[in-house]
Picture 1 (cartoon, chains in turn cyan, yellow):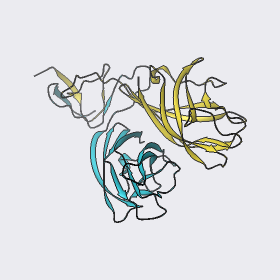
Picture 2 (tube, helix red, strand yellow; picture 1 turned 45 degrees about the vertical axis):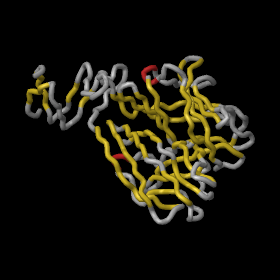
Picture 3 (cartoon, rainbow over the protein chains, first blue to last red; picture 1 turned 120 degrees about the vertical axis):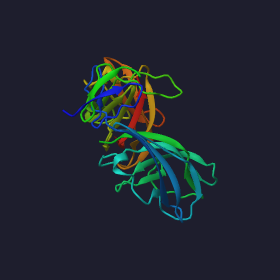
Picture 4 (cartoon, rainbow over the protein chains, first blue to last red; picture 1 turned 90 degrees about the vertical axis):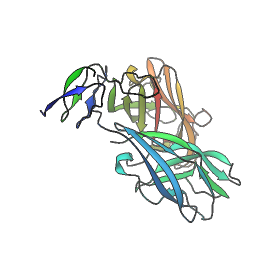
Length: 155
Length: 162
């Protein structure tokens, strides 16, 4: 056991190991992570040159909420999806062998307002991938994604 | 100064009642639940010749429940039924502590088509009926899967509140 400290409950409680909550009816799990980070990725694939894609990760325990800023671009590369040039840090990355896919609103058509359903997912190297619903490539004049959020867990 | 508590800050803090955080600008609620990675294996039936096991992992923090599942590969269909658990032979139901107060529906992706690898948008639902809360997958039109063809489920997730 470490040292015992007197804690003033009008101040901040800091723990090196986490906390356990009652979790009535379930199995207690140690809660030991809470943080938010914004990362600017370089998006590539169906558009060149690369451009900024701003993503914010908020993680509490092993549960992550990922939100992003919308963008649209004139597609100028054939046969490609959109993906980040670098990987998501492991602390925010799902560990499945096959990443989940999330249905989101994307831009895939003849104008910047050609809104339709598409998907966002994580590639095998941990990069963020945006694609049409078929999981195929962008093939129209404009491509992009509307701002939104997804959630998932890491373990 | 408020009350003084003896806390070992190199170890684990366990509370029998939960905690309240500052929650600036809002109304603090007691955070009293955190449970991570509880796996339940549902028995899915519907468009296939025989039922299939389908593990779903649940995590819950406060009143928010996350459900995550991995890929269920496409298998040849023998009927155009929807996919569901619980109502037609399944014995695993969603525990009450994870169940939403009303039915919930989510956009996901499924395998559905004449060819094995065809991916389309579909629907995941948490429903109540029969003996408890169960899960369901349909095509994007809230209908059954292509028959003859192939049906499966892509890895996905959903979250709701209880």
